[in-house]
Length: 210
Image 1: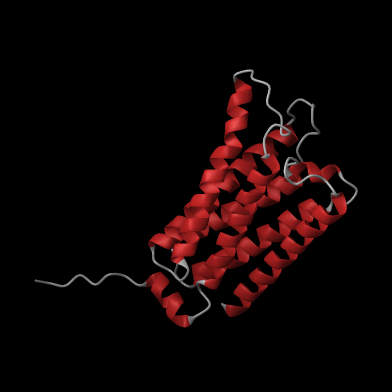
Image 2: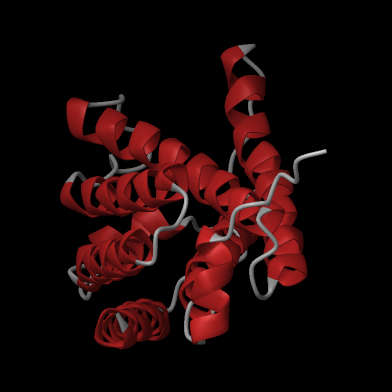
């Protein structure tokens, strides 16, 4: 159990390190440039590498939660989030100005699915009153709020209104979603480190007979 969690934390940390290195070397404007566009830079290979590491970390933490007897829905959501992260990295987005391709479509909808699944998993854990439940709830609500802001520009463009990432802080909003969701994943793992916390995951209310 502990080995799974430590491995999960190490993998997530390596993924975060790869992502930060990519940002530092690319030199793009993080306020307006979305993360997907970093794939076209010279160090763009770090993007799928980072996302794959996040996917592996999520799978390891999900397995630790499963072994602890945690909520099967949360386990499934963490695994699905990891699979979505892998798809996002494996299928790069289209270059700006290019019509949506199959790869770009898979990338877009896998990202939306991932952005939605982690807050749901975190809120389910928070409802179970695990350790760090309050922080987890705040992070999840922040992620969901940022996700709404991510979706709004797409809806606006569907109505034919010209709106580019230069007009809004698209990069900042997207990074808010990613950072909060990775933090929720890390807290999910941290909540299981103590034996008492692991027992709380499988605790059931006792129904007393009258």
